[in-house]
Image 1 (cartoon, rainbow, N blue to C red):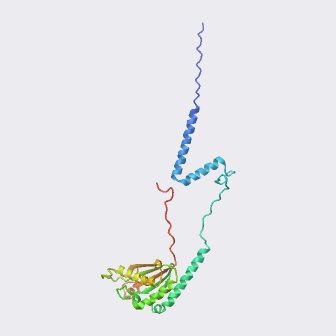
Image 2 (cartoon, one colour; image 1 turned 90 degrees about the vertical axis):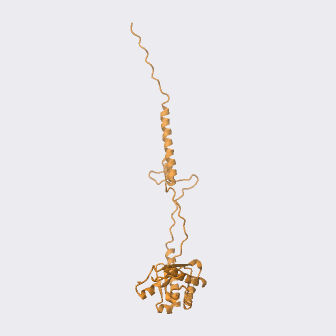
Image 3 (cartoon, rainbow, N blue to C red; image 1 turned 135 degrees about the horizontal axis):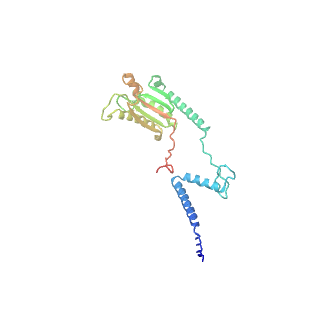
Length: 264
């Protein structure tokens, strides 16, 4: 009698295979949002670029292949990029020419007021890139080793102040000495002597009507000589007061802020 075959066991059908694909999809989706979050935390600009690119890729906002992506806000027309503001190139040279003309008028007025001293070589007017500098030999202004203006010099300084009071240029007054040391109770060094001489001229200008907000006094001592200090003539040239009439007005300060995304 033939042996009866045992019926073959039916293969078990797996009805949960979709879970594998679903788990892969969830994992990819999670990784995508992690990347998006990381980009937005590091640099907001990179996040916006990626977001706009993805929007254009999925919705074809441009309507043609290879077109430039344009961010469109629903319910409003596309916003064209805002042009970067440029300084008025025509107005700038005009303003500089006006400033130069004003400065020349100031220099001519001062030259006329100090003509006798200019003729004697005691005063020089120099035109620089910053404006006009008046160099006055200290023998015209102060006794040796002193910072009080001589009576004869007050009228000359008053004439300069009268011209400057009609302008609005910033003014810097610099005191300079030779390298001969000084050590008195009032002036322990040439620094103090040069600074107090510059301040004496500043006070006279302010009393004559030049606004205090336009005035600055600096003492350089012996650090900026014009000539060698090895001769008597050179030392005499180095003892001076320089008055700089500055054509460059200071600009309004702008606070420096940290760039987003910079740093760790």
